[in-house]
Length: 399
Image (tube, rainbow, N blue to C red; front, side):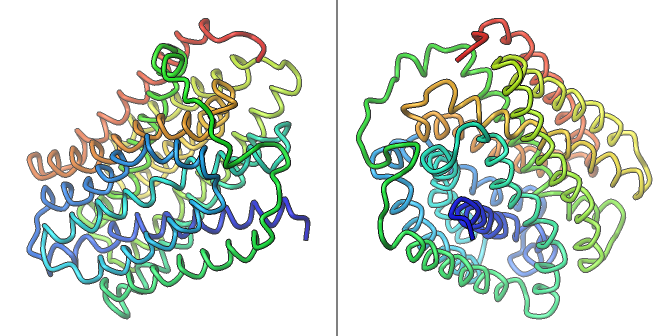
């Protein structure tokens, strides 16, 4: 098998496991709330604790990856976060659950900069966006597979045993990763492990980069809303069973998987023809978030299970269409500090991991419905589309 294909498969596999770990709690809302004596607001705060840990490490993770390379950092972080995943199964209340989720967020914060650093170092930049989309296909695939798998594990073994099983998967991947790089070859397109000066002035003063960070925040709010609350939304709004919910959530994630691949193809195709960052990166952002805004607005008006699934699927698909462009822009802006660029923008994704689950939990606990939370997602998506369009003029035509 071609080494590039092997590498993409490994990245996609750890992304699947990564999102198994962070989404598993959403399928266990009902039994966790019952066993630990939590309500929706408390569960939302606990789920948001993951985002807090993710936020705490995000900036430092990129600097560490740029300095020491993704081979060592990725393998070690996967080992540790898998151990923490097992510990979640031993939670005894709100405090222990939230603490373990903070630790999980800290260790999983290395995943995103490792993805972009590895792709930039080892794969041809001419198909970087497609490589990103293929690697990140693990995100929706984790939920396509995870819906039936995780709900089935909960139904058969209980939610505690499910987390222990997931931890074992991550440990196996880490061993496979170190075996793949056992000869420590030299990177093809990059120089991992070589210290570089972090361009703080350029990072902090670039309006275009901050606009992309807001795009990542918006994308994160959508992902964490669906990731943490879609099962609960279906169970609490339409009274679906745990097993039934596991199969229903497949549809939105399948749509997002196809859209993610399409986004990578569109970005690379436009770039090869125009070499325009605005046309190939920013315009897909505008289109994707505008489509998400319309879809979630329609979802807020829906009162049937079938139409709600359709609008949720479209909203998530449009959001994932923007993901290859977001990642690729980070590598375009700061090619010598790719992991740091990605990691700093991931702070905003991490912030979304706090805001989205916590705000949704508070809104649903206060109002008794998901309508206001969905409207918030629609407005945020529209804002992201407009901001991306406004800051288009500040990005040079050619890199």
